[in-house]
Image 1 (cartoon, rainbow, N blue to C red):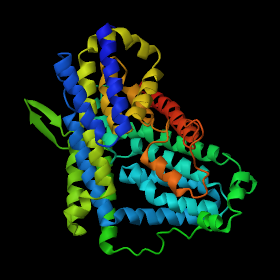
Image 2: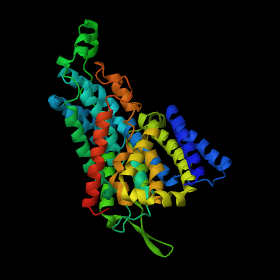
Image 3: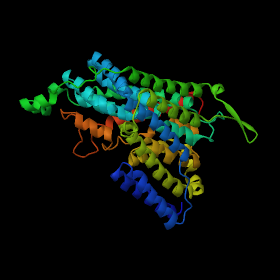
Image 4: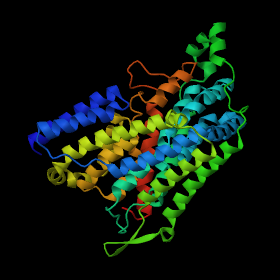
Length: 453
């Protein structure tokens, strides 16, 4: 590798580090500054922004935002609360399973915010250490992103892998990806739940907690009033919105499972089936429109929803970061392939490690996928191996800076979910490491089993 490569790589890392400190849309905006540095400063040809990925992201965000604005998301959350309150003794295992299922259905890990106070309430009032279920649940919610047909990261990976066939000669499809990521993530979350059951001291044996509740006012604050959605009554329109959304996800999954149902067209004299990337965009826009009409939504309500804000932030992040990395790495593809191609073939797990670290730097699975998958394909990482290690796109458990982690810290009034003296020893690092490592190992085994690597 030339010295110029390392200088430019340092520029990328500095830009990512500075952007990560600002977070939010700053990721994409500062990524654009990186593009200027490479084009005008180093004379590199600008890379290609991931337009297909961004369009898919926009369509998915529109559908999720419409669902939340309609109140349909609260319908799902109410059913989740019923399950947790029915089996409070098993909250440490059931809570993360519930959050990963909700992420699977909705395509976003932000569903965890509403559940966190409920998980805390159930935990504290049944004598369970809140840290156990709350930290596991935030991790599970993010692990669910790579198993959801409505997830930006999933559809981005499928779009980026188009034209890079697996060993069976086919492009990576939605069902092929999910048959690896779904069981792997579920196994990982189960392991996280069981490991978390034994984390920290029981509340009755925790001197710090016992000292805290000696103060009557502090005890009242810790135990508080019951947080619940059970008394909320939903309208017929809200239930219809939920079924429209879930039905659309089912249609997308069926089209992925049965390619014969997908229409074909003659393009340049060749019979070509409709791309699943295009199909996802069509159906997500359509269900957003249907929910918009059925629930009689106002545009302001949709664009002010948490899902829309978080989704648009992700789109901007992908735009700038992926454009910057494609500009820099695209200029050195031949050198990277020559220097690192054999390494990643011998040690394929090295790709997973790099993906985890990049994900932590930019705090976005979709952005990490958009930045790293093209590079991995360019240096010779097998497409099946990329699918096998999809869970590694979630690496922001390393430091407790992600919004859902911060929310868990805030909602735990008992103070059991916390950041340690050395920052790195926080409540989320063990469940994050256990969950992602387990899911990656299982993903590798399932990819082998299905003959994809």
